[in-house]
Image 1 (cartoon, rainbow, N blue to C red):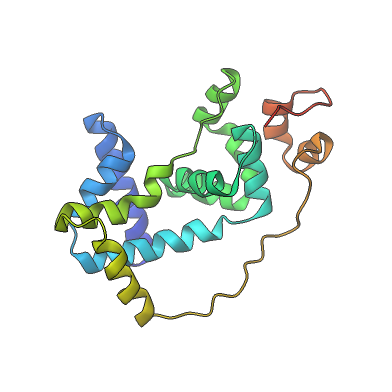
Image 2: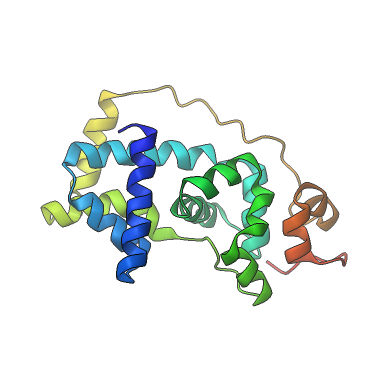
Length: 194
């Protein structure tokens, strides 16, 4: 599955969810369930690539502001949530995480002082959910993935996350993420509690 096909799957699931009133992750699992197992594995491989590409300090800082704090596990969910927004918002975020300040869901959540915007854990497990739907076996995906990924071994070099900085330093956060800083930190000198 090439990257254009991957994003087509994401956009199709978004359209299906909007049309049916179902949750995006459920629409994605339903869509993937209609694919051959090999294609589901290829989807999972592309998902991991785009998910890993957001594993950067600046993206994590955006998640930290939006979520009122952000653990390692929550950062996984945040990156899945950015993918669920579709290719346009994903690419904007990858280019400039501060652009999320313009996303309607982020603006609404900031105004209501809610910290759940963009954190979407279930999207991380769509491929395994599709395999379970196909086979009835909750371990089927992991067994198939172990075989699939061992056939395509790659060097797992450490990822360059960019420059680390203190997420609890309000001035630094405002400097690096000025739009999100205005939404979540205001003009004062104190950060929201995590």
